[in-house]
Image (cartoon, rainbow, N blue to C red; front, side):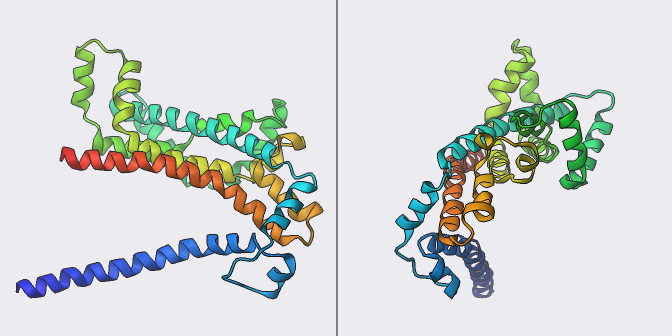
Length: 281
């Protein structure tokens, strides 16, 4: 009986490990091929797929930087938009989720229903109306419409509220109020550290979405000095790099570096939060 249970246990874990390896390979292979193509010439890329890196990385870099590709300017523009949008979105979404979870006010259920409906609506449905609205208030060719609307992140509010329902004790808030702490102090000093793993997870998703966002900056920004990095990479294909695919792959590979750095930085907060929760249990 014990032997059978043990075999069944290891058998289940064996298939889980196999599935994890397959999913890991599926996730890593496209990135690896991107990096390989970034080191190959256009002729080599046209010959077909290869798993062996080439020796043309420096040549591709010279092409990338020698024909007006303002890579550092694009980095700075994308970093400013992504970091600012992420900070505002996560903070105000957490504040909204906290209000919906803790306070009991009229219209609370209606507001929550509206948030759920917004999640179900496709983003592209409102792109024309959003463009017309931004044009009327004369905010085209500005970073404001790329940052401020991110505050109203319905998906982030949903995730954080559900996390608060499982991890946040209302008695802790009541105790802080008895001690004389104000509502803003309770939120900033007590609540935010408790939900730090959820904040870190949503920061990763928000940063990646903002960094990779191409459509919204493309329809709003007209000054080349304000272009984000994805817009500059797209210009490589359409204008001056008609055949230099190695340089295009290199530009795309470089644009992934900040995402990996941000993920590595924020993921430790997720892991530390899970560890602290496990120890507390």
